[in-house]
Length: 556
Image (tube, rainbow, N blue to C red):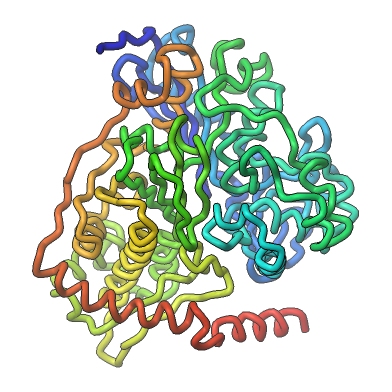
């Protein structure tokens, strides 16, 4: 059956860790006419506050919400101008955001950090997804949930992350009770930006299910929350509880103020907010069971649909309709991927490598990848753990840290660089193994994100995973996914799968495993698993002890 789309254009806006991107998309076939990027002026606040210069403790990661408005004021008009289109042809707009990125606001949506009296208070700022300083609170949530036999814990693989809404909310209460009392809404940034676009606060079902512990229509009980802290008893009903919006439906219409910011027509539908990873499944037309989507950037999020409900140890969550209506949506992830490669290049690569790259007219990453590509599997003699930003899945422990084993005086930067690439592939294999052992098949990996351009990395993944790698044929995967949801919200298509089939862009099986290399990686993966389990499952808590020593030193 052929569905004829309503003609017109849609705009997708993707909010990442360091920047926001807008893309103008043709509804008929998903063709991307233009895109524009706006870099957040404040970036990630992980050392000091911009207002006072106050030093932030280890594990903190904050942002400034006005940077998000800057995307609307700069990236969207720039994308429209580059497309050279009549803005009257734009029939809808959709957004996605990193999750779980939390904004404490007043009743009208004003972020607390925008109030002069709170500008010097760290807890008044946006807590970025990679804010990991709430790990002690997450540990207590997990311990109490296990003790009480809370049924919802199984829907999250047995562990709640420090990145999520409840752990960060409990940290706010316990470290700055005054600000907690001032916080009327504890808002996912995905919903806050839609609020700014429409003037209406609608809580998206995706974030609420995966990050807000909303299962079967209920949050954790008042009794459970009171046991954590008496002042936390009303957290869910007072700070979180709000009408939900289904994915692909309108949250409201573009306000006159937002129209002035963006140059878009006032009154067009704005889709309910969504999460960057989950929305990308539509961009890759990967909504069928078995197709795991990996959005690879600073971190990696893995999402997968299934017709069956299973309990997967260490998964980030399983939500009914969390990705697309009518299927169980699963999520897992790695807290550091591109961040790890970037950190290594910034801190551990000598100047001559930069000079060599500059002479070739390529980036240092490309230079290191070319050097590493000439090696045989295992030739560098190294093995790394990809925990530089903690472990999201399957251990769900952000007190863990990175490691490289096997270094000698002969070790070169390209050796370590390749070992780090391989470590992230081993981390993804660990996740896929957990899904398969729980009875959730994974038959294909569909990759999106900025790391697609590294062909060595993609081939390593195909070899390590022994899976064909398909690629989302877009440099703007999440933004394209948001545009697809915008088209559905504007009634251009009847549902998300139909829109994804018409507008999604994917190239199947671009990378296939090389049997000899896959065999060699099997041996290395066995060694990775030994390290993973020894340091991550209780063999030795040295990584945790080092974190405690670090905190004590900073506090002195």
